[in-house]
Amino acid sequence: MSVRLCVLGLIAFGLSGCEDIEGIAGNVAGQLARVGAAPDATNEGIRTLSLLGGDVRARGPEGYCVDQGASNARRGFAVLAGCALLSEGAAVMPTLDGLITIQFGDEDTASVAGKETAFAQFLETESGRALLASNGDLDNVSEVSTVTGDTGVMARFEDTSGPVFVGTSGPQWRGFLDINGRLTTVSVLSFDREALSRGEGERLLTVAMDELGEVNAPVTVAEAVTE
Image 1 (cartoon, helix red, strand yellow):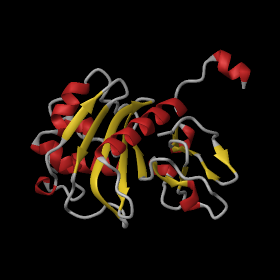
Image 2 (cartoon, helix red, strand yellow):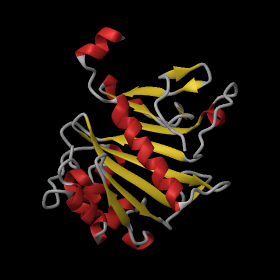
Image 3 (tube, helix red, strand yellow):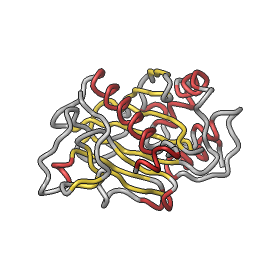
Image 4 (cartoon, helix red, strand yellow):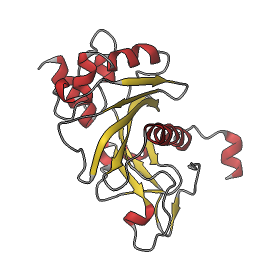
């Protein structure tokens, strides 16, 4: 199996077993407003979903709920959209309206913290573009722009191989961060009906990554007593 195919399998399905492509590709490729903290669940939709046997949790920005039908808790995959789109009783919609997906990798695949620059540089290479392409063909991915920060690495690109989800189009924003020892991927997609601007997509991804880190943060003794 080629390194590229191994990497694609890892990012898509959270599989393990590839040695890293000189340190990053294995694990790296191992994965594929107003938006703040909100209640874990409401009577208008599910805000938070436990995945992988409760080891991690998925939660989106304010106004986002989990699409349980499209998510797969056993594989660490979650899809989130505006609550009003997923529940007949919900009237809540996010300020920044997009589609968010979250994929948790296997245990011990954390690859971002302390290596943000190298990770971002990898995504800008031909191997990185092939990784980001839904069909593995780097020719379908435009030039990748990346941003590094305290939360992780963010990439913006356009994949011409076709929409990941029906009803979405245009550039994609993808974030990579470590959660509980797992390389985690967060994607933001635009709906055909209302495309996100470059700034809006980056902003939504940033808040989604922050929210994911917060909901998976270790609970301190003081917090446990308070709860």
